[in-house]
Amino acid sequence: MTQAPRLLFPAIAALLVAVSAGAQGARPAASGKTAATPRMTAAPKGPIAAIEARGPNPAGPFARLTEVQRDSVVESTRALLGVRYKWAGTAPERGVDCSGLVRYVFSKMGIDLPHSAAQLARLGQPVERDTSEMRPGDLLVFSKPASKRISHVGVYVGDGVMVHASSTNRRVVETPVAGYGLKLRGVRRVFSVDSAGASGN
Image 1: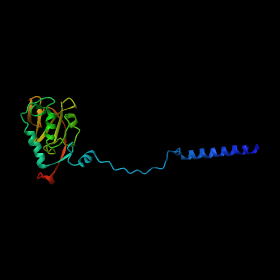
Image 2: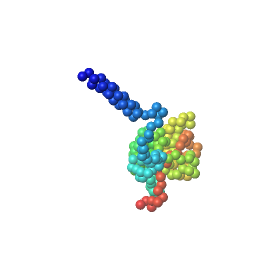
Image 3: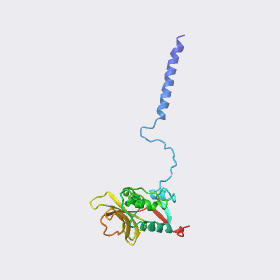
């Protein structure tokens, strides 16, 4: 009667060893080489391409405008000449500051831009700081000569000239880019021109 229990214990021990070996076999090899699980991932797009692919974007940027709309941006910007400067202002009837002017003009095209020169300096597509490369509607961002902090923005309107809300002149003025007192730190293009829709349709 005592023989059966004696045979049972080795059988249980053997079973436990087999289970333990199976569990160890399921662990990754010590070398770290494991069978890779196939994953389907889309190739990432560049930031500009990804934004531009969305097409016209009311939340802006990067929107597509026709040439007529682009010209309208310039006309709307020049229409603000003489409007008084007001720090943090975003409406012509009460006054605008530099980024408030930009925000107001582009909002008329359905492009929602931040009310911050520093944030505008990071939006859209960078453009060479050269009037041969700049296009009407590009944003010009500036800092004080001894600083790298972006503190001012204007709208390029062509022919080497920009329109901006000047705290010195206390109003919106048109100024040649060359020789302007602040340091031009960058040019940003926050919309593309769809030449196929030049008729404005």
